[in-house]
Length: 169
Image (cartoon, rainbow, N blue to C red; front, side, top):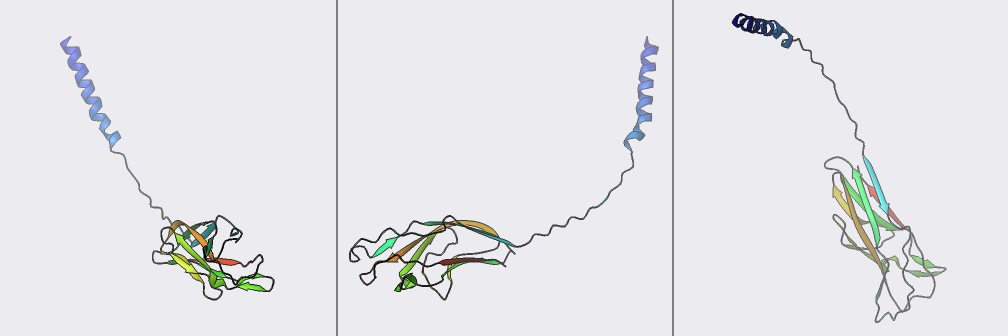
């Protein structure tokens, strides 16, 4: 029986000795080049296509300003690390109802949100900065418009358009 055990051990050792070349296999490497072109992109979303003020029935002495419902604004931009991203707004004209006019400077706004400007006065010539940041990012904010209430206004329904522009290099 000792002979059979020793024979089994010798066979096992022999098999292990002969099987080691299996672990010493040849290997090969290959390189793959990866290229990704990331282009600049900007996206602006405003949650409403209109701003409507409630009917102005209040006494301008006791209600000097009328506020409209806030606009929700989402700004997204993909640009270079130092790229300047800016959201501006400019009015196309004064507020008009037929021949009656309210100067656009009577339309002011306040905004809130990370990288959104604090407040501004509407303008027909110079775009006003609503938000700005550097590099790529996604920001959300809100903007609330207010109209100065005045005894000098003629009655009517006044309108104008506001143009928002998002620029990112």
